[in-house]
View (cartoon, rainbow, N blue to C red):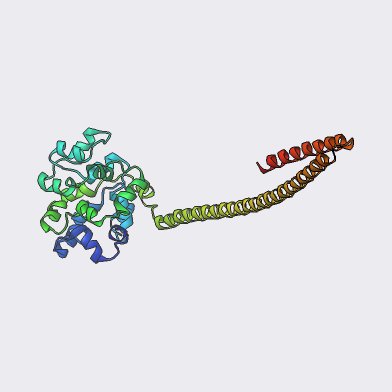
Amino acid sequence: MNHLLINAGKTKEMNHLLINAGKTKEMNHLLINAGKTKEMNHLLINAGKTKEMNHLLINAGKTKEMNHLLINAGKTKEMNHLLINVRKTKEMNHLLINVRKTKEMNHLLINVRKTKEMNHLLINVRKTKEMNHLLINVRKTKEMNHLLINAGKTKEMNHLLINAGKTKEMNHLLINAGKTKEMNHLLINVRKTKEMNHLLINVRKTKEMNHLLINTYCWALQTYCWALQTYCWALQTYCWALQTYCWALQTYCWALQTYCWALQTYCWALQTYCWALQTYCWALQGPTVVALQTYCWALQTYCWALQTYCWALQT
C-alpha cells in the first residue's frame, strides 16, 4: 500500500490510485494539463501563497507530499474546503462524526450532486470505526499513517478510495469535474501551506523508524535469551551440586550402615562370651561364681546398651 499511495512517481500506479476511470486522457485534463491556463490558475491559486501552493499541488511526483496535503489536515477549516458540497448534512455527519464544530462540518460535506454515489464512495466502508479514524481524528500523524499508509489490507483500502473497478463510481468521486468551479472548492484555500507541510510531510523516515523499533525489539529479545541462558546454566550448576550432595549423603549412609553392622557383630560376640561365662559359672558352683555372675550381668547390660545404640543408629 505504501507503493500505492506514496511512491506514486510512476504514472501507471498513480492512474490506478486516482483514476481507474478507463479514460486516462480525460483524467489528465481534469487534474493536470487542463489546457486552460485560466481554469488551472483558479484551481491552484488563491492559496495565500502562490509559489508554495504550486510546489504543493503541481510537483506531485511525490505522492507522499500530496497525501500530506489532502489527508492529515489538522485544522477542520482547511478540511472543510477539501470535501465541500455534500447535499445531505445528516448522512455525512454520520461519516465524519465527532468533528468539533458541527456547523463547519456541514459546510465541509454539503452540496455534492449525487448523495447516493458519494455515500458509496465514502460511507460503505465495512467498519465505521475505521472510517471515522480515517477522516476525523487526523491530528495525530502516527494514527493516520497506520490508517492510510501501512494498511495491511489492500482490499479495504481499495474500497476506501476507489470502490474499484467501476468507472462510473470513480467519476462520481471527482464529481464530473467538467466544472472548474467545483474543483476549485475541493483544492483551494489552504491558508497555511508552510505549516501544513511541516505537519504532514515529515513521515519520510517511517521505514528507518520501523527498522529502529525492530532492532530495539531484537536487542531486547537477545538480552532476554542471554538472561534465560544464564539462568539455565545456574540451574544446571545447582543440579550438579545437589547431585554431589546426594552422592555424599549416600556414601555417609553406607558408612554408617557398615559401622552399625560391625557394632552389631561386636554385640553378638559379647553376648556369646557372656553365655559362655554363664555356662562356666553354673559349672563351677563355687565362691568364684558370684563374682563371675556379676561380671556376666555387667557385660550383658553393656551388650543390651550397645544393641539399643545400634537400633537407634539403624533407625
